Length: 126
Image (tube, one colour):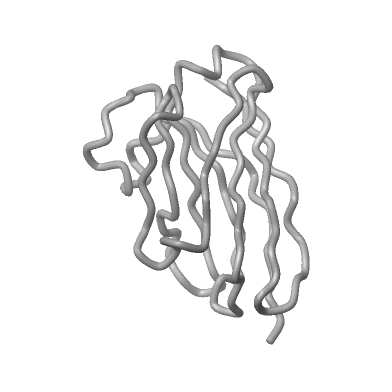
């Protein structure tokens, strides 16, 4: 398995930006498709974005399209989530996750992902 550590969360005003990072260690990072999920208080964890092993394919939940961008640097074993135009409803704990399969079917389902980070808190004030 790969170990994942998120960073970059914090408090930001509405309309602001943050870049989350997820550093991987252990197994070969480029063998995993990566994703970001988020979980708001009292709500279920939900899919936000996914990127394929090579970075050539990306997928986004409708609520982040046009505002968030997922990217990866396989040389640095890191996946990023650039978040612009943040809204108070984006407040959540953000988790990165790793999927050994590069097949994108079911990419929004948590069960697809074998490894998870501990999460980083993002708080957006109005």
